[in-house]
Length: 311
Image (tube, rainbow, N blue to C red; front, side):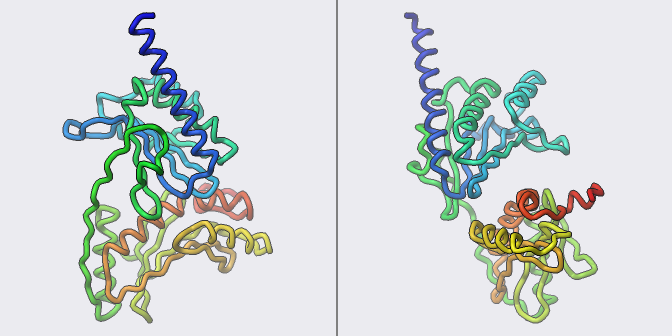
């Protein structure tokens, strides 16, 4: 056996071991968390992203993403044949023509198939030579994941220490609080924000709009988004709302006048911009896709349905 043959056999066994570990991890239904498997590469000479796949686990649902040419560094850009290969594996292209490739699966039923797809994507599409060239990272409810929470046999990336803004302000009236809120929201959307006629700040999400409202009668800010509309109340609606509320760690879904809303209330005396920024980022992530998932159970229409004229 030549050295090349030995290397190829060893590499094939390593990919098989990674696929097995991923399948086992998914079959055991991991807690809600986000996991990233990416090519280990020095960031010093990297302007954009390296090849990676990402998994976002929410209950029994797993939203996976494979990085696209919109974000890949030029040295890793995919040729058309590679993009076609991704699509053939079962990845979906962003409908707007930008953003990452994605797919939705359920665990534990899809665990083995998803594990195989992830390995094929990293190995055959992105051309990662072997699992030893990969590193894993992730975060959950309690912060960055430790090595024992990433049981894939890969290097584990050291988490970056986040910079936290500990600024604290005391707003004397709603108008002053609105100014503070506008500054905090603008740092999330990376641009100027405007108040609508109702006095709310609209922040577009993928499937809806999250509104940020300063309350007039208390030092508080409410964040809310329409998840579904034209929903007829039935006991099934109440059951579905309860099940969803059990699975989310902040905020709640409520039914009001034919609408299902996702809302979160933040007390703001004192006002801490970092808390509002984190709440807004969390709600934007949580609301994406929530309407489509709930629609399967209780009907109604999403904002996208309404804009497309779906009856």
